[in-house]
Image (cartoon, rainbow, N blue to C red; front, side, top):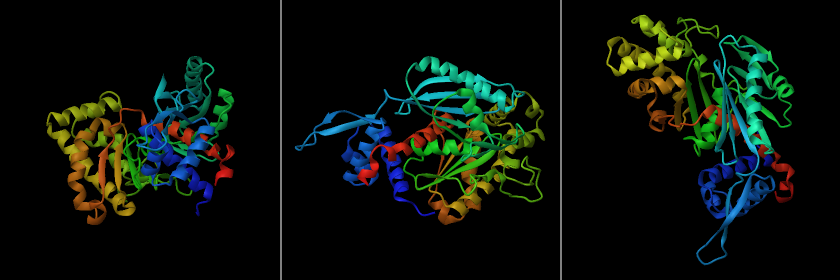
Length: 401
């Protein structure tokens, strides 16, 4: 699809604000240098951001002989953005100022049986009640919500959430009716929100071709090109976990056989270990994975063999992605990465040269997410920020194109 002048303007606006948030306080001249935009273009965009209430001037600095330069910063005293991470066992809300600093956190625990849309929305509403009480009159600019499964972002519909057996749930409308919140609500799934968080605030900032691999109960990849999230025709891009590496392999929860997720998703990893060690069936999924990681650190043969087997499959899947997409950077994320990454990632790096083509592998950086922030909530709030920046065309920018 051909980019319009408005699309280009918004991309430039995102770039300017990403750098400003990372390096504030800063000047128009430094922003122009960092973004490779002209000073005139940056000045126009900054004017729009100031009129929108996102950026403020916070002082001046010596320019080395010329007129003092105005210093810019996000408007941390202005409106706020809210990011919500909805998972099978919790609802986690974070409130951010416009420097994307957390100013409030609320978490609601959910029982596995609490999986109806009304119950999930009830937990979000309870968290929002706490947030509103603490915010007082401070305006909310937007709400981003990450839901598991497939999401239609245009219509705000949860198309399919397999763990909850949701099909075509009009979640945004239902949530809007419950919250009575007079601001936009943005929905997406964790793959997309984590990737947006990486683009704005993580290792993906400034990367042209980015893939974020999320290893958890499910498995997927978030893709971004030229600093923009890639969604595909139906917001289904990144279903890497449901690409096939063995047509005769085990059944996947998507209905197909031999998917990557059926080999490297958390249930599959624990099943592999369970063939060798009965501790795989003890406790919750997260507890069992932590036990596996401890057994690997202790050098137990069953754990070492499990990690080697899983790493073989993971390397095959990552090599396919690297050969197909040719990314500059792959970031591994997700709770399984957090628990078992010390074991899996060195084995993955050792096996990749045997399976990936030399040229794309030579251009690749492979990193593990080291952010201590909740990247799902952060990315959901960044989606709300991007939505708020779409208002830039209403604050005078038409006259400055």
